[in-house]
Each structure stands twice: as C-alpha cells, then as structure tokens.
Amino acid sequence: MLWNKWIQFYFHLPIIVRLLLSVCLIMTSFGFIIHILEPIHFPTTFDGIWWAFVTGSTVGYGDYVPLSNIGKIIGILLILAGGGLVTFYMATLSAGTIKHEKSLTEGKISFKGSGHIILIGWNERTKQLIRMMKDKQMKTDIVLIDHSLNKLSYRNNMIHFIHGQPTSDEILSKANIEKAHYIVITADPSLSEDEADRQTILNIIAARGNNPSVHIISEILTEIQQKNALRAGTNAIIRSNDFMSSLIYQALFQKNIQVTDIIAKTLEEQQFCINPIDNNMINQSFYHCTRQFLEDGKSLIGIVREDEIILHPPFSFITDKADQFIFLKAIK
Image (cartoon, rainbow, N blue to C red; front, side, top):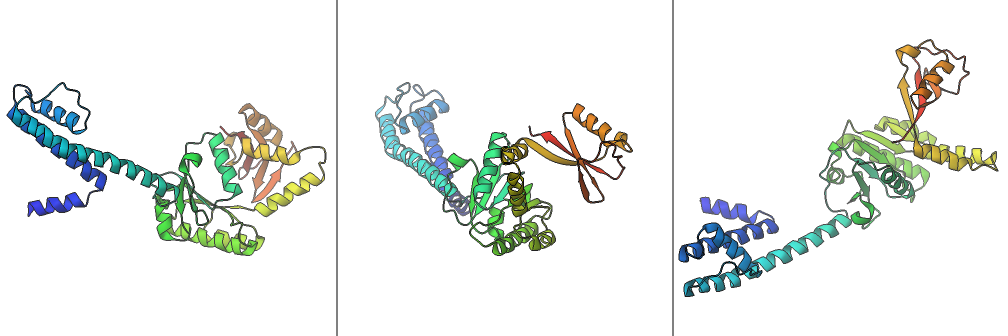
C-alpha cells in the first residue's frame, strides 16, 4: 500500500524532478555498494557517492578508483546505467528550459509575482509607458495582456506577456490579478471609437470583478462613455482625445515654440499631485503657500475647491480648509 502511494507520488512529479531523484538514488546506491565492497579504497560512504557521481557523469577525476574485479564490474554497470541517465537528465533539462522560454514568449506561462502593474492592450501608448518606466528605473513588475500578439520576447522587453482576452477570468487569473496593484486599460486601435470604449468598459467590469480593490486606469475616447466607465468601476479616466485636441490647440498659437515637446517633457519628468491643504496654510494667501512649496522643491500651480479646478489663482487668493493643493514634483 505504501509502495503504491510512493509510485503515485513519484509519477505525479515533474519529469525534471523525477530524473533528478532517480540520478541521486542510483548514484547513492552505487556509492554505498562500492564502499561495502572496497572499504579500504573507499573509506566512507560519501567517498563512494563522490566516485559514483564523478564516474556516472563521465568526468572521471581518478582520485578514487575500484581495484577489485567486482569493483570494476560495479563501475561498468554505473557507467552504463548512470551515464545514460545523467545524459538524459541534462538533455531533458535543456529541452525543458527551451520549452519554458518558448511558452513564456507565446504568453502561456502564468505570472506568480505580486504588487505588479497589468497593462491591457499592446500599442504605441503602452510601449512608450514601458520605456518611460524603464528609463525611470521603476522596479515594479509589468504584466501585459493582449490577444492580438502571437509572441513577445521577454528577453527584449522585460515584461511578462499573457496571450488572451482580458475579459476572460482564466486569463486574468494567469496575470495574478488578485495581487496586482494597478491595471492600465488602453483603447484598442483596431476598433472604432465607440467599439473601443465598449470593449474597455467590458475589460473594466472583468477586472473589477476579479479584484475589487485594484486601482484601474482606463482610456476612454468618447465623452458619452465616461460615466459608464466610472459606473463599471474605473478609478481614473484618461481622455486621450481631449488631451490631443488641447495639444493641437496649443500648437496653433505657438508656431515658433515646440510647445508640445515642452508639455511632453513636463509630463515625463514631473508628477502632478493633489493633496489636502496643510493646517499651517489654511486662510493663507496663495503667494504664501507658493513660497512654502518652492522651499520644499515643489511647484504649486492651483487649488481644487468644491470640485472646481482653479489653476494659477491670484497671489491674493485666500485658501480654505476644504481646499486641495495641485502641485508638481520631480519624478525620482
């Protein structure tokens, strides 16, 4: 009964583990046998095991050799049995490594980490985001979910790729969504704006259903779907069309200045932050608060009051305890 359980356990192990256990068992057995047969030349069991591993792997240092005929026969059997098994083990290990790398490239391997960022959709926006995170040397793991890619080299991109539909619970589970901190959902460029927004909302629903606490950032192209995205459970909406229109508007009136480059550089190197007002800045002028922020290496640019964004108010503007500060700080 016990033997049957051991056999079942053994054959349920991965083939690499089974081969390694078999190699260790055979080498240990031959090492013990040679120690019993020639205790003078192999004074300890470990000496016999060392000889067995060296001989079975065809290394052959020659520091221990059997001298009796029966010992030499044991050596021949070891070379025939152990040598072939070790070679097969190394070949299987190499093949397994290549297979794992191929499966990783094809997006078939589940992600086992935690605290990671999940990107949904492979496009120029996600490519640029990955490059920016790499340039800033962010240590957070990135998992990409995309159904249009057939393969993505981990070695060249350093992100974990999962191939499949982001609305599938199985695919989201492979991305270990339960332990993710952020999810970024970008619009599918192959669809029309309305279709892309509907797909994004479905992605939000699937993500929120699998992790109620994860922070979701989603790209919405049409104004009519922004409320639906919030209802679906997104935490933040990126209105890419509005942003692009604003850039074009700025460029229309700044012919001699690369205003779009300035804005892009600001977004790349500065972080926009919103914090509640400090007690020592309540009922103070905006000028006083601006100086205080500059001393801390931050740039105060506005105030949020009753959900209204007020950018660059007059220096005489007096703060209120319910206000929130809008400021810029360098991305480290």
